[in-house]
Image (tube, rainbow, N blue to C red):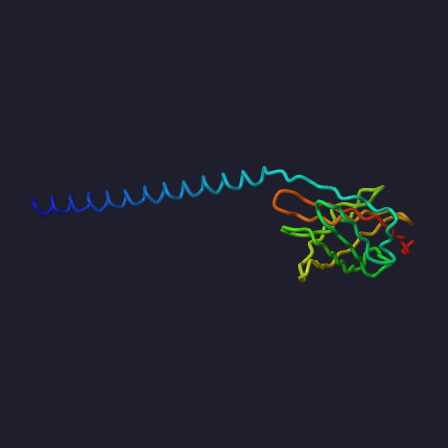
Length: 173
């Protein structure tokens, strides 16, 4: 009878301790899950202000780099090689800027008169305010197509958007 009582007490103590630790672990995991969900919700809802720089309509990307400057933001220039800016061929893109507090730089290509889908390419910093990357324009059924390349510079509280326009000719037709 004493053995039975000892065995019973042993099982109760071990089981209670195990259950206690399980509850502690469950509460900690639940707390971590709630904190993570709250953090992700907060930052997914954060809307960034878009600051548009002025379009220089006289600039020609087919002849060289184009730049724009805004006193309270800084300067942004864009260069695309090859200068002919062909469709469906690799492009080498160079962005130079002195904008402060950059988190990332991307270049977004969109058709001015026709929706051409999502064509955004992230640039990689190579130092001294220069960002480089590759890109490609999609094929277009039109003989002549007007495009807008937007350099997007994300900072902590906003996105600087510098537009550049150019045209392409479809030599596949």
